[in-house]
Length: 112
Image: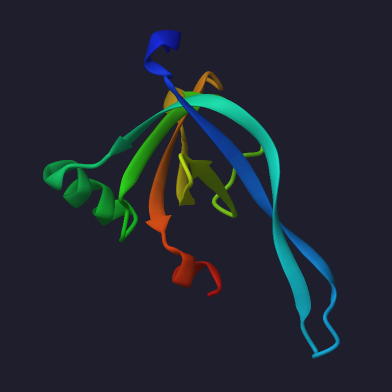
């Protein structure tokens, strides 16, 4: 993977389960793990149709160097936007590069 292609800075976040909230539930918050260089690409019509066969509602593909532990239970922050990770693909199983299929989520979708 050529480093010049990685021109976007993204923050990888994980969901932290907190303490009981007194109403029978628990509090949740997102915690930043690290920031990395990536290539964030909005999918065009053909790419979106193909990606949605794998994961419905896919809107972006994010390419980055391999990072152990990145899962579909995480999300990315990118230029003030939130990208929910739907799928993690270890390219050619070489532990050098991963592609993430993501869905951009709005503020109303975050509480679900």
